Amino acid sequence: MAIAQISKITLALALGLCSAAASASTLIVIDSRAPGLKAGQKIDSNTPITLKEGERVTVIGPDGKSITLRGKFSGLPLGKTPVASDPGRALAALINTRNARTSSVGVVRGATDAAALPDPWLIDISRAGERCLKAGGKPIWWRPDAKQSQKFTVLPVDRSWVADFEWNAGESMMAVPELAAFDSQTIFVMRVEDQEFPVSINIVPSDLENDLILASWMLEKGCTQQADALLKTVGQNQAVSK
Image (tube, rainbow, N blue to C red):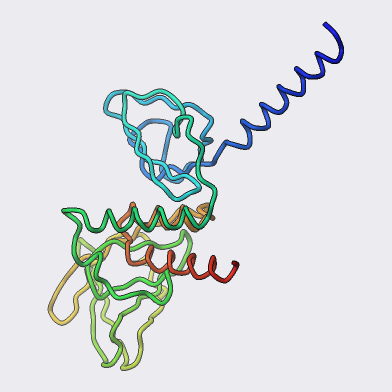
């Protein structure tokens, strides 16, 4: 075979490999009912996965879209369709997904009509629902109406202890005190004005660095209020960078 022809074949193979590598995306597992895959794990979109009957895995791509695969399944997580890399389109698609999800039948009303958070990482304790907290982060409680002083009580689900607190008039944020009793808890019962409601804490994996992936993770966990605050920040940053 002529040297020139060998060179062309080598170049074509090299370009093909580069193209395949470029199209690969890092996916984040956010929920898994399959052995070998766990929430927070990173997988390559070019790596085939196999699911048996009854197994299920949900992943998020760099565009913020979540995909659920169910067994029986064997193949590439995203198929052969490349993942969109346009940040603006990805943000718009994620917002559309959020709106469709929260307007569907069965979504708790309180999850969609909550007051807007000034920061995505504040924990609203004025209503029941899911909340998200960074791994290793210290929770900061927040209330939307800070006009008056207000007493409230925090209890674990088993009610093995009780902690009483009070908001000062004009105070809307409160750092959770350094109490060992809080460290291992993921569900709290809040008691405000003789009404009790649960607040569940979902710990966000520390390696979720992409804000669109993070927002999608929050939406999957039900932290809609916080996801909305994060999406608003992402949109503002994109507008500034244009």
